[in-house]
Length: 378
Image (cartoon, rainbow, N blue to C red; front, side, top):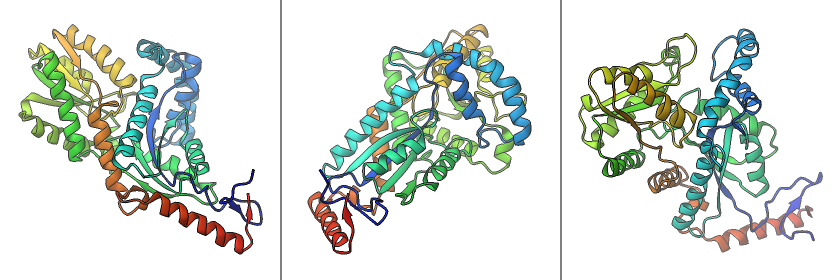
């Protein structure tokens, strides 16, 4: 049965979303994950990730030879073994953790703006669901205003910058792209710092406090910093604000960078070297948190909680205790909801006094005018 408020032009293209459809969206974007902890599933995921020129800034022809001639022949099996250690009956922790966060944010926005026609969706930069697929689906649902929120608190060209590339590529083919805003970073947002601090304090209340607190951020090649990437400075700012909020001195909080690959110099100090050094200096219990990761993943659950735990103990430490990422905690959901409302000011759909009935009437009147001008019902 044809809709009475959905009209098309001469070529059958839709110009008006359904009157009852949502009109604004929030797109959370995380890194991505393979579909299974197997070399066969990991290979295409790694191929897409490592082929991104934002991630590896080498001449394309040279990197193509290295990637396909060496890395994709060896690394998928090794990575699959690591993924198998953290895989659960629900699947990938990053995938179901990100989905839970998106669901929680949807509920929280509805609680704060009961009449707001807002849809929260999740996309992955690499793998599925892709940014392009998700934006097309949101447009089909009637989203005409879209806030894109990469789940990277600190900006880097390798992460948020890559999401912007995917976003630009996704809207190239759209005849009528939605109005778009992007959250570049939230590394120093007071509500985010409070959520991090609250999570650490809650963990300490249950498990006791270690001798040191290590803040481990994902690393990037050092030359990216010299090229103008703000990531290193934003990580240091997050660390300073978190240390001040927790009331700790500089000697009690250590900053390091993890996940380096290859022989190139990356941001220092390295996490694996730091945990060994701290153990050698007499630190018995080391607490580690990863403030650059919104949701737990391979880099936190396997690299930190397993690999670096073993490094620490082998160097003479007693225990390395990993403090989980914020995930879908109440603190993170509320801080992200506040961030969304901050960045969507001026959009009627997010206004506290949004009048859904009046908005629907305006769309119906627009449809009537379209019919008078010759548009036909879809």
